[in-house]
Image (cartoon, rainbow, N blue to C red; front, side, top):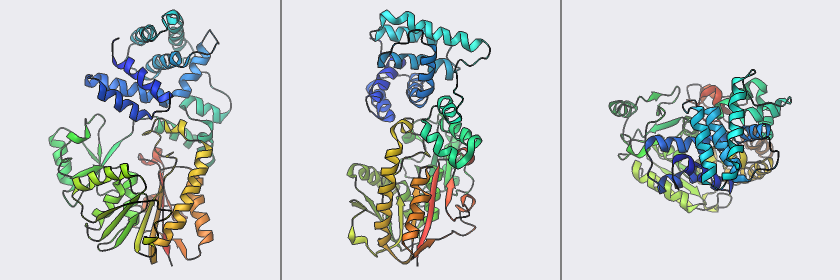
Amino acid sequence: MTQNSRQLAFLALRTVKKGAFADVAVDKVLHQTELSAADRRLLTELVYGCVRRRRTLDALIDQLATKKTQQPPDLRTILQLGLYQLRYLNQIPPSAAVNTTVELAKQNGFSGLTGFVNGLLRQYIRSSEASPSDPLQLPDNPIERLGVLHSFPDWIVQVWLDQFGIAETERLCEYMNQPPHIDLRVNTLRSSLAQVEAAMQSAGIQVQRVPHLPQALRLPQGSGAIQKLPGFQEGWWIVQDSSAQLVGYLVDPQSGETIADACAAPGGKTMHLAELMADSGTVWACDRTPSRLKRLQQNVDRLNLKSIQIYIGDSRELPQFVGQCDRVLIDAPCSGLGTLNRHADARWRQTPETVQELSQLQREILNHTASWVKPNGILVYATCTLHPAENEFVIQDFLSKNSDWSVDRPASESAIAPFLHPEGWAKVLPHQQSMDGFFMTRLKRV
């Protein structure tokens, strides 16, 4: 059997439908085969694209299928691959998309249904050329319309609609279907923004600076393998989205302090705290997952940071830190609704029920780790989600039960200042600021 990029994409998608994470499925396939750079890009685009656009593609299949019987899951995956190329990949000629999809059906046990596959895809092409030109029929209900058009579950659309209104929600949905940016945070203890910028440009990589962020550089699309970029081995920088970099400035650690990062892995924010305090003092990196802390340790070694101490354990316990910390960061486990362009399958994995479970976990972590903070100390709570149940509601609930805590607004010259709301917390909206969606607030113990 020919192991071309489309066949491998089909195999990866099949494992995703059985429960594998999309990025894990793609990495596994790429490591098992030798493909050209162009084929690797096509495979990656097809898998992430079909996962991301699943609801739209399924709606098209249901509308175009002349046989209304339930298609086997593998056949539906093959149809999704064909329709994704026709609808979203302008560089692939329609005839090539149809022919390769028919071939895919033959290769995978559907020789008797090649006529059905061919007919459905050609029906899409004919409908695309007719007027109106989009074969996709949309529901009248505005929530369902956005959900089908942009491929999101209705409940996520509803959560955003309640906060942002219909026009902003549509822009947010569109943003979440674009390829994600890759940002670097320069390790100013080993290098400088100008030095990394010059090294990248010498290698033909036109990085861009990011407003408000003194250590951030944004890579252009298609910059190649991260580990091969200038300065990686030397520990000059680490990959970290701009939004996540803002969190470090909100914590604002000072040299010589004792800091705890309560949910530290994979460690980008932990290392930023160490850099901001000139690697002087102690940063306790706490997490309950040893394998993720191992990755943190590898990056600590690469960046040559000495102030970070790793501690394995559940931050809802750990009594030894009570009253010991000048500052605590809670980068709370969350639904990740602010990073759905990075994690193609998260929109289908999360549910209203998982959000409620996470909200309870977040409250438990916040309630316990608040006891780690010394009098007049600081606690920063941050998530990469855009769900009030994990953000504002968690903070409001905590403050209503703890009169010795209050929101502590950062100074007007802080990097975080442009993102502040009147309540004193910061929200980053991806479609407005072109970075991951984040919520963060700083609390002070009286």
